[in-house]
Length: 165
Image (cartoon, rainbow, N blue to C red; front, top):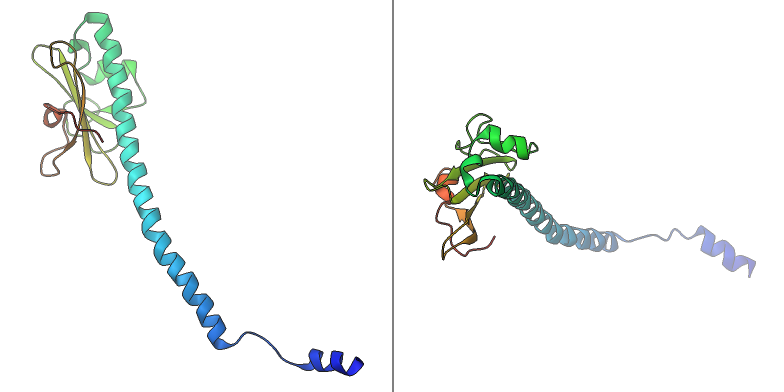
């Protein structure tokens, strides 16, 4: 019995090179599966940040709408910033300037002050827009992904249809 214990202690057992290579191969396969998934999740999170900012801007615009029954008070940087200061509108002085980030909202108000449109550029490079029609038979809130060939402005979000993000 004592001899068996001495023999076991003196043997130099370990992992073979093939066993180690199999483990490394399994880890590499798991990494190859996980990295694209994580990168996709990052892009989706960046897109959701821009969409959330647009929804917050719409809430601010609707707040302004309730005061005057039109969007005339929801079209300049100063007016919107007074209601929702966590967002930047346009370039900080002009709400109609193109968006350059998820918290930077470009705004457009129709000439009859009944349609409010806005756009925001996500960090992933997609431009999201929304348009809220206050009155008429086609009233409602509509969403659009603005064509990447166009500037990310509220004017390019006008005419959004029944798409969703």
